[in-house]
Amino acid sequence: MTKRIMVGNVPVGGGAPISIQSMCNTKTDDIDATVDQILRLEAAGCEIVRVAVPDMAAARAIDSIKSRIHIPLVADIHFDHRLALECAARGVDKIRINPGNIGDQEKVRQVVAACREKNLPIRIGVNSGSLEREVLEKHQRPTAEALAESALLNVRLLEQLDFDNVVVAIKSSDVFTTVRAYRLAAERLDCPFHLGVTEAGTPEMGMVKSAMGIGGLLCLGIGDTLRVSLTADPVEEVHAARDILRGLGLSKGPRFVSCPTCGRCHVDLFRIAREVEEQLKDCEKNIKIAVMGCAVNGPGEARDADIGLAGGKGEMLLFRKGEPLRKVPEAEAVAALVAEVEGL
Image (cartoon, rainbow, N blue to C red; front, side, top):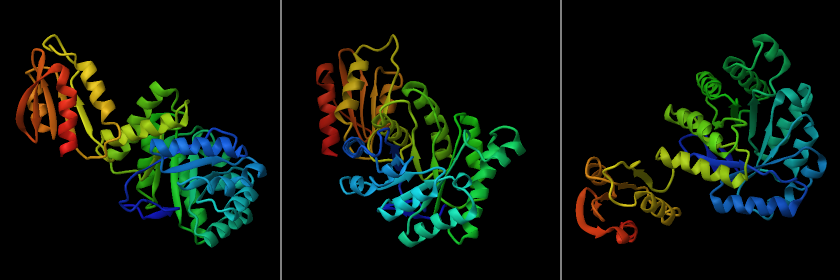
């Protein structure tokens, strides 16, 4: 188990629930636009939000943004350590840096001192597109070994400054490289890990790659917080992250089971399944729901769920906690299932 740190009021690591993050794509010094986007992210279920801080105008917007939102705010900083110092002074909840591109050790020391004074964690962000020159020259390309080595070097650099309030992210756009890099780092580090497959792509392929990489690592017990990186509205990242966690049974909300249908199905299961999922999208009960189409696997899956439907000819058999309750007409199946869920 990794050690626990706090990002604002959100615990990360040490067995805490896995938190969902996203990053704004607004210009940070456009305070109204940035706040509006963060409020939409909050409504979607985002628990930690990051903003880019490329210049001092963005850094000086931090306190105004923070005063109008309700979740912890992270400043994403590269190259200029003075931006980190300004953000720390203005009340940001976490600093994201790559110590290797901040400059000499004195500049890193100043950032560490400011974070220590404010009790702010630092996220070390290792990315296949921005490895340190010496690490890249040694490994020739951004291999998993190179990424893990960069993470280890940067953690050790902060440890030399007596600072261990650290989260580590090690991201590649390649799923296999990402998974192997995190596994290598997890053998050597006990800090919390921020998961992600970087530059994963558009929503369709990006979701697939993220589910494979993030989901695979979570199945191995690696990961404490995550961001799904999509070329899309950041709200879609939050929905995707929730779906990954829900699919693994690691977040509040129903786990859905539904069959792909075949020639034995005599109900409109596509419609029924979509309507069930839509009507229960805000449900936070940790339950299993099965919506099945025929008599082959349907009764077994429905019986194994907390609430289930198994299709017949124009009707469906409703199950609760393994017991058949009654047959309901196809047109009433969704309402019957939702009513049973609400009664649990």
